[in-house]
Image (cartoon, helix red, strand yellow):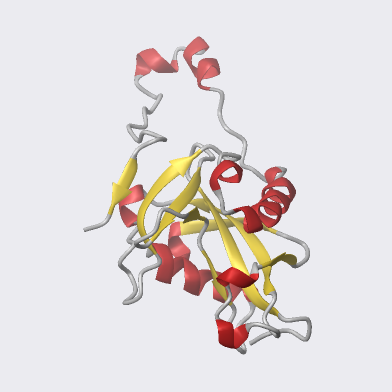
Length: 189
């Protein structure tokens, strides 16, 4: 389904963990990394498509996330001809996307890259918020920058752990330590 300008309606998902790090998925059998994203089917709202893609690509359900924000308008990127199937050239130009910022409220083990019969990713990791701009494919970089910039103001506030230490929370065992390493890469079997 293309709009009259040749852009396919799509959703993009910026998934945060409790440290405001973003989910970064490695496309199956490639060295390309990206945010979860996918097309909007006929009759679907962007939010319905987002939940469907969230489950298909990373195995999460609505109860595993909280919607923090979404982009106000469509963000577009054009796909270079060399990436477009020959039969689609001339009428397909690229993607127009609504981006969602989600906060994961479940543990990492809820992520399942094999939730669908056609997996998109074969590995994933958590990155600091702006890191994906350094490694996303060039033609998507502008839309990623627009989405990250627009949604950055909605990032959940992080507790200042040193404040808790000053209040003695460390000695009472109230301060939790997260063993997840931001740079670790997890592969699904």
